[in-house]
Image (tube, rainbow, N blue to C red; front, top):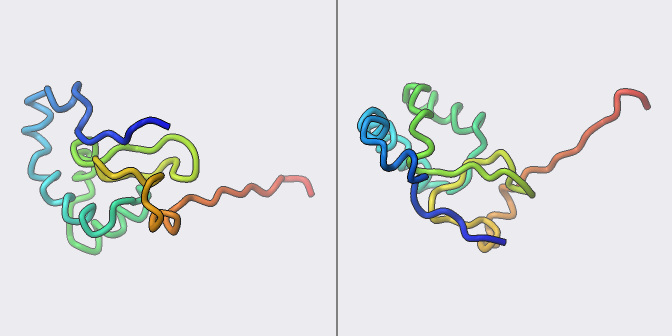
Length: 104
């Protein structure tokens, strides 16, 4: 349950130094999240590299996305205001977690 966050954490959004330092990076990242609402950190960094964006731009992620911490979207960055649990097309972006025991 719960509602997906639709704005940055108040502790960050109310920190003018953080916002000022990362505003341009957030503007560069935003189009990626408009094209695709859900990203793993690894795939986002690969896309940033492909688009010629500095990898340090990922420090701005909390201004435009939140990190899902449980369930099939755990460890994925999700665009603020987007709830993958309510969007059927998000099923294609779920994390499939399987583990192989060391001893078989």
